[in-house]
Image 1 (cartoon, helix red, strand yellow):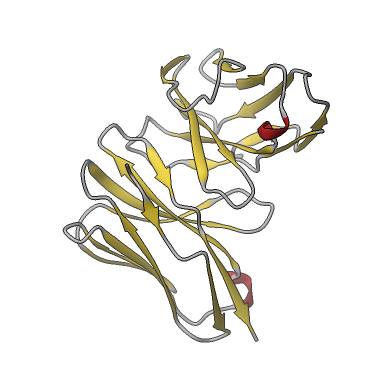
Image 2 (cartoon, rainbow over the protein chains, first blue to last red):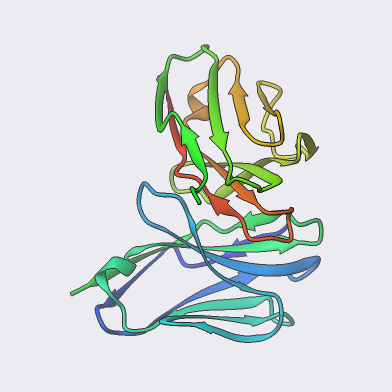
Length: 109
Length: 114
């Protein structure tokens, strides 16, 4: 299968750093996406990794290790508005996106 | 320009009725995707259009589900003889050329089948 595993929920404090992990099956891998989805809203694109390493974009960074089938999304200087669901999605060779169930992040004051 | 739009935003229907959900992709995007998101579940791929053709219908859950796209733009997802398990948020996304490009999502249609 193409199981994608990520924690169901996480809680963090405003101003802190949080890391959301995602593991996936490596066969046929062709890219890893992270999306943010606020309750009742559409998912919005955050990041894309296809090569190993860290991609930094402001307060958000995403890391990929292809050999380990592992990615993480790092959120720094957390703000209350960062409370949302974070979706990890793996793209296969045919181009189809397979989404994980999402990690519900709650940022507390 | 404008993002992906979907209508209606909410639809409540009775079991056994047919429903049509509409998606307007970002202008100029040739690829269009339909997903379903059930409560507590990840996004489930339904169908993908490249222009007006659907090279990948593998995600459609049953023959009650069909979709079409005309003029390379607007798409309609039709669910016939709706069942309660069809209740979900139906999301549409578009990308510039195809699967290799980032997908941008619409706000979704929340379907409730009573």
